[in-house]
Image (cartoon, rainbow, N blue to C red; front, top):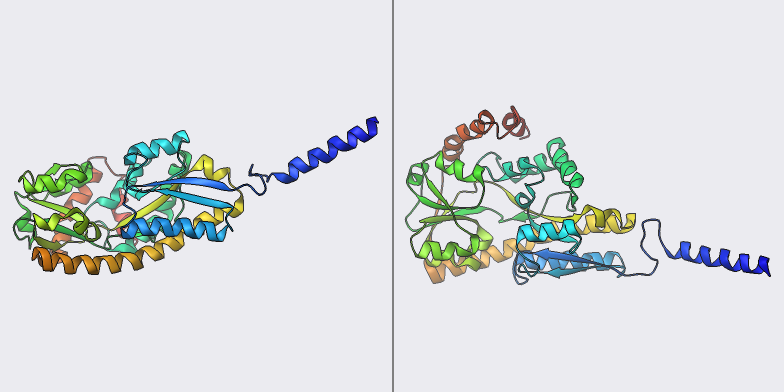
Length: 335
């Protein structure tokens, strides 16, 4: 009898072990992940996040499911990142600068004209300098899934203004909306502008009430924000490259099977390719609407003039101890 009981216990233990993977996922169990985003689901970015979720489900044969919560349903950006660290949500997708609390060097991405183009920015993110940032993020509980950093936002940046802006000289005295970044505001102050921090959702009203005269924006977000209703002059400045990162809690990631980890990484990188396709289509449609409904005028700049005007500020950051010595030249050498 004792021998029979022992055999039953052994068989039961074997069943329990075989039912669970070494990473703690039960065999046959559907793993669901909560992904929070800022963008509405009907935008190009919103559609890309859903495409990412669809890819994950397809690649995992339904064993891994990403539920997308668009339009800040789970809270503002910093709240969602806190949620990730607390374990109440698993993932957050937004601009990389949202994670600068974990490594201040992330903020270099929004310094005007430090990077020559998106390829230059990608070399920074995927090379040794970017790997150091990624290591710091992981050490602080956050992992970026789209390792190729190919989810381009924009795909370029413009300046919307009440009066035409054609040269750096036109920036002098300009009341320009800024986001909360000491690097960004100080950069525009260095060329004579008067930056004012205004919440993104309050920028249209600030323009309408003349609290600011201009705003910079990814071209893809101009029409949804209706900026050209109150600022009909558009200058293509492309001051810095922007991308979206799909981040996951490191605790959640490390608890997944290796197969599920790889599926998330592959799907995130494939989503970046889809984003480019959707964004290009959306921007073309938006430009036609802005021209026909708001009568916008579009200006190009002498980019080298703007690069030269901002270059002194790049090194000023090192002199003030806000960037490590030699960091700017190290970035520029990546071209």
